[in-house]
Image (cartoon, rainbow, N blue to C red; front, side):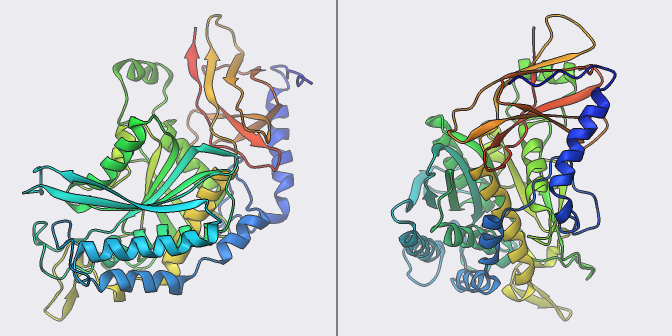
Length: 469
C-alpha cells in the first residue's frame, strides 16, 4: 500500500517520528552504539548477532603472526627478487597466495585465490620492465554475485630511498598490516555466505606509483564490473603519534568529495545542486560510521573529508579515478620515524618500519571496522540506482524517484534528509516498496537521499539523487 503523504504542516513531526521509531528500535543498544559518547547518526545500523559472532573471530595474534612473517622476507620492494624463496617480493607473494588458498578450503568452493600479474613498462620509479603481481582471493556472493566489494592492503615495502631494492625494508605498518587485515577478513569470512561478492587483495607496486591497484581497478572497469565499494588499509598499525600521545580507539577514513572521475557535465550539475559533500565515497564513509562505529568494534571512525593526506596517496585512488566508490583507512596520527625509513639507530632513537612499533590489539579493532562495514555492505541490498529529484515543475515540495532493485530479499526503501549544513543524515522516512515518494519539504532547503532495506533489516548506502527535468 502506498504510504500516506505528509502535509507540509506535519512533515517535520512525521519525519522526526520516523527517526524516533528507528531510535526506539536501537534504544536498548544506544549505549553500546556510542564508544566515544557521541550520538550515532539517525541512519545507524546496530550490529546483528551474526555480525557480532564474525567480529569475535578476528584474532590479533594471527594478525601479528602475518605481519612478522611478511617482515621476515627482509625487503618486499617491488624491484626486489621475484624468485628467491626466502627474501624479496616474490617470496612474500608466494606465501600470501599459499595462505589465501588455505583459507579458501573452508569455503566449499565459493572462494578462489589467484595471482593477477602484468608487466609494467618503464615508468616513474620503474627503470626496467617489471612484473607486478597482485594476490587476489574472491569470495563469491550467494545471492547477487555480480555486486562486488573490495578490501586491500599493499604488500610491497620501501626504505628511505624509493629505488633501494636491496636494503632491509620490513614494512610492518606500511603495509604488512593492511595486508594482514585483508587476509584475516578472508580467513574469518571464507566459511560464510555473503549475499554479494567480496574480494580480498594484497597488491604490489604501491610505493612505486599505485601500479598494482591501478591494474586491478582497470581490470574491473574493462569488464564493467559492479564494484560498489572499495577500502584500502594503509598505515593502520599504531595509535601512537611521533610525540608519544595515543589515540587507541580512533581510525581515520579518508573520503573524497568532488569525484576524481567527474565529467564537465557532472561538475555543472554538482555545482548547481551543492553536491560536494554527497559523492559516492562520502556516502560510503557515512555507511562505515553507521555500521562500524559502535561497541562491537570498539572504535570511533573519524571521517576525513579529503581524498588522502597531504603529499600522499593510496590504492583507493585508481578506483576513484575509474568512478568506483573507494576510501582509505589510516591510523589516527602517524610516526614518520617508522615509515619510509632505513632501519637504523640515530642518537639513541630507533628508525624503521619494524613490527615492534605496531599495536596488534589496535589493528584487530581496525580489522573489525573493516569487517563490520564489508559484511553489512555484502548482506544489504545494493545502493539504489537511478535516484532522481523531479524538477520539471517548481514547487515547495520534493518528488523523488528511483529504480527498484532486483534483490530477492528487498523489502523496500527509506528516504533520508538533512539540513545542508549537517554532515550526517538526521531524518529517516520509511516509504515502503515503491519507486517514488513525495515529501512536503522544499528541495531547495535540504538534502535528500534514498536507501534500500532488506527483509532482514540491512540498509544499503544512501544514493544521492540527481535533478531530472
